Length: 317
Ligand code: KG4
Ligand code: ZN
Image (spheres, protein in one colour):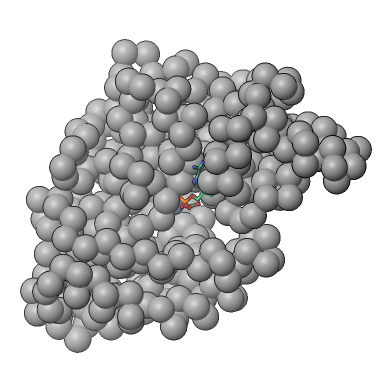
């Protein structure tokens, strides 16, 4: 039984996963509302909230799995990348729990965690596959050759796909986080109303900053009434451009390989429909959660006591 802990951004999460990949509990406490008034995550506010939530969230996960800490055999925690102050709260909690019971501790890379959201029951995906990881912080094309063996084929040169959704939502006067808001509103709009550009960058990389600027130009001269009238069309056209960019690259890179999509943006309904043949992370496991962290721990190296006491967080890879 693996206890997973995830605090890299604004979700405080704990999960219990068995060694064979069954989820016994998966608790996510989102701080999104707390940060919404600032239009984005405020790191120091996030750290403090993690501190308040981490013990209750772990307790709730144990309760929902119907087990006690005595049955936990391993503790897994996100080590990075992410907000260092936020990560440190999860790491300190994981160290304390592991230390108090002399359990092994597994430091997990958050991005490997997203990929490992595919390895859970009831429909686990087996490598090899080509993986699009699209989240608020990253947009990566990965050649996943084994459970702990992947090569990066492409990344974003500027904004991440989720960041493009969030910044676009802000320009449209929608709430934070913006991906879901745009996704919902786009259903009422015409995706062909605006012709937003898909950046052409060399290789298998991505770029979304030009698209964001195009949306800025399209919105800045609109009166509040005009914006109200065109908001759904703008959202639909903007989303179409992001999905086109992602799908285009994935198709280019995949060859005969199986395609998989993970990360918060993998929750996007248009992206999911555009890749009917792909293995898609289950919806509750797209955005940040601790089940994926515990899942990744099954394929990573565990540190035994006391080696993990000096474990530190890292902000970027
Ligand atoms: O993976 P995640 O929870 O956190 C990071 O590791 O960054 O991803 C969060 C990102 C946010 O940018 C959010 O706007 C986006 O995922 N997102 C979506 C949707 N749901 C969440 N983007 C598009 N459509 C969605 N339905
Ligand atoms: Zn994430």
